[in-house]
Length: 77
Length: 77
Image (cartoon, rainbow over all chains, first blue to last red):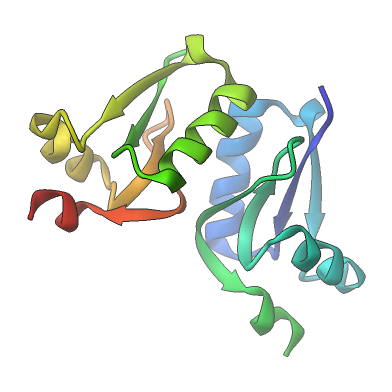
């Protein structure tokens, strides 16, 4: 299976969602990207349809926004 | 693994999220509940912390709201 990408920014909501997603999908099926730190990947996330973090980009290209931690615009500010 | 419960209400956002979640977690690990139809389970979802659908209640008791389809209050109206 192609990996899903979990975008987060280290916020408490992100950390909690990350824990659940790892539990459900398995770490091996995930690429975990902290766009709070690796800001060079914000644009890529945005292009994929990510509006806020935490978010999961599935192998089929759909974005699942998981709860709400921070908007992408806040990360760029 | 204990099952996760996927609460939805048949809305387009719900249907799309359901497809992704089945793909990621597997149908065998999911109980899928349409609280738009089975309104007797709205209270249970609410007690678990579900504010809107689609939402996934994980085996650890955490709620992941996946995108936004409809608020629970709208379903009760």
